[in-house]
Image (cartoon, rainbow, N blue to C red; front, side, top):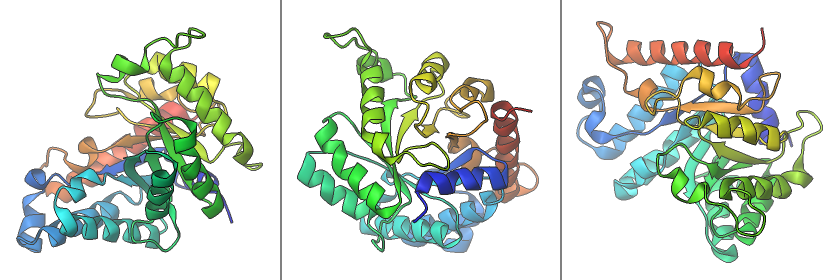
Length: 294
């Protein structure tokens, strides 16, 4: 069984891209052409939007990242659409990260892990995002499930939102590390036994926001074997230059997420579909050129 992050690295190399496209179906922003074609049924709208995004970005993205919140806000209809988009991405061979940010005590974590990482499950993804606040014992079930199924997890380490500094940049009393540095060290420890001989990457990744580029560069030095998921590029204001240092020296080890800037661009004369494809192509080129050595 090929580990997920090995497969993601293969996709990055073959497609010459580090772009991860976030699929966040904000109902009020869905393009008019989708509304006309799908009608008023929420499940159909969300599913059609997700499928259209897959069609438009597949040639430019290393992976996609559906955000479950924008689906589950619409109840069972939304969750059926989420499951359909996950399954369709995986059917197309496009690596898919379920952005679910789960995290709880051990027994509950095991249930969450089964829901989102178990092969054949309705919400099966290739990797998911998880929250580390409850500590190592709450993360271990996700690690175990990922390793067993050849999948991956991304632990929130230094996020891209303005409030990240409220907790993540506090000093740990015992040794002076910042909280996000201590979290990074925990990630390294949890992933130490799952490092691939082919890529040198573990099954335990880190979410590292591009809006704090100095922290991103420091975390890459601290976590040489850790795959990064890098949000913050595009609508949140980070540039391709900001994300470059989150990659390893050869350009590997990270994918950069863009959501709104790709899926809800300002539509030109060619309409929404042409604008999405153009935005994805531009992001792909800009990010790859910034992160991969010439």
